[in-house]
Amino acid sequence: MHLFWEHGYEATSLAMLREAMGLTPPQIYNAFTDKETLFRKALTRYHETEIGFALEALSAPVSTREAIRRLLVGAAEAYSRPGKPAGCLFVSGALAASPQAQAIADELKIYRKASEAAIAARLAKGRAVGDLPENLSVEGFAKYLAGVMTGMSIQARDGASVEELRGLAQTALAALPAEGQNQAASSKE
Image 1 (cartoon, rainbow, N blue to C red):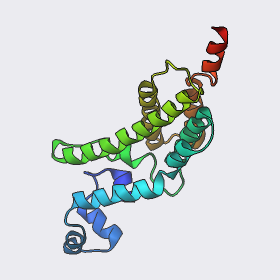
Image 2: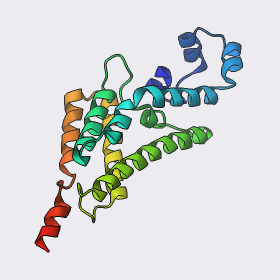
Image 3: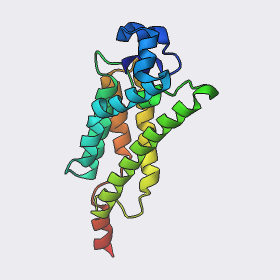
């Protein structure tokens, strides 16, 4: 998982995998069938072990603003964790995908779209309880937040510190409409 995370799908060679896993090429193929299957297993493991911060943030019984703050700050910390590759595997794994790896690029896109949908669902919940204005496009703002997180991943790969990434998180959070705007608008009518 760490090799694919650090180098991407195509740049991770069989020799690198062999060395990291201590297996011969026939053993790798017997265990995983092919590199693509191994990569998919790495994606599943990454999803299960590395993005808990996002799942916890989006499901926490807190205000929408706090949930999004936790999500963005969690991303800043996860993407710059010492001892781990920088950034997000769902982003870095697809940065340089050739036409031969289109199935892998499509798989990574599914993970990124699922993350965006989870953000949109949390924003919709916040809008429904009055944390956000009724006219907020949850899909549009979710796309914005997912874009910020993608940018944070790339910035982390380029060496941005956790403090710099937290700064990006705070800037993005400032774009979130103020809580309780529905109640304020209702009281004026």
